[in-house]
Image (tube, rainbow, N blue to C red; front, side, top):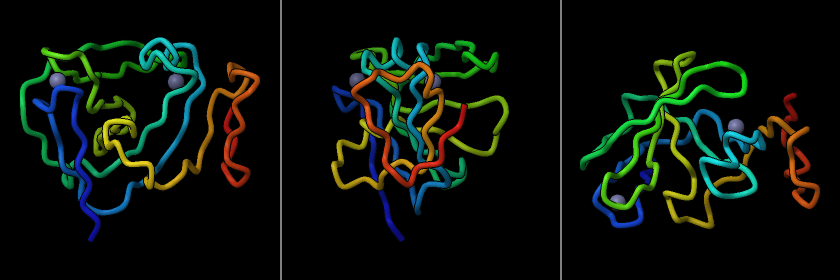
Length: 131
Ligand SMILES: [Zn+2]
Ligand SMILES: [Zn+2]
């Protein structure tokens, strides 16, 4: 079974995810743009019981553009978000894919909030497009 390790910039906060992700998505919403400092968010969901977390974190709860609270856990030293929890899906843990620092990570199957998409961004052709 695949095992992947994600970490913050300084390496203090890390997690190990076992098995393949349940869902891999990119999100173009403005909240994701602000959170990541990038043009879109790229995240993978894993079953919560297949993720082991180590290190100290702090939590920031923000409400998504859809009105759902999401709890982001970030490293108090370097500020990187390493995982977050969704109120609508308590059995999963979402991990920003960049935290894996793995260019071979599988591509996103879902692309959401495309009406907020930067014009130059081209989602994978086979991705499901949502709102
Ligand atoms: Zn850190
Ligand atoms: Zn978003």
